[in-house]
Amino acid sequence: MSPHSTFTPEKAEDFCAVLSRGESPGAAADAIGVSRRTAYTWRKQNPEFKLAWDAAIERGTDELEDEAKRRAWAGVEKPVFYQGAVVGHVREYSDTLLIFLLKARREKFRETQIVFNVDYSQLNDEQLARLASGEHPRAVLASDSELASDAVQ
Image (cartoon, rainbow, N blue to C red; front, side, top):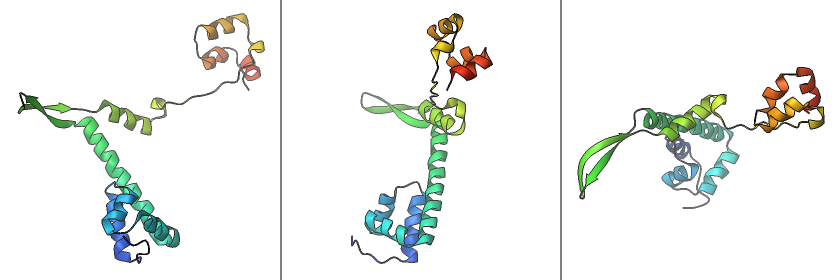
């Protein structure tokens, strides 16, 4: 692969077609016979190619998401072996893929951390006991909104 391959509209189209299938830029570069570095150089030098590349990545990501949904919902047929021979099939579903799909679409499924800087000297004994028992600071402080605004910075 020559690092100085000539950019052509045909090569750009073929490159983007590979990206649209969910492949990586490296795989797309290999498919058209150029180095990954050359592809990124073309991207930097050609604004139209950059836009086409970005659009192809989006289409490819949609393809990957669709495949993840299919595997999560419809499952995948896997062979069952007994003494080295296939004796049947079982459909396996991917709970992990389903979790990732939910996290991508709904905030409530994401693993977010909210950091509370609490001035404990502003809390009363009841609130300190509730915090010590593991109750969430937001729930403890919500019971006294005036105190909450003083205690949380």
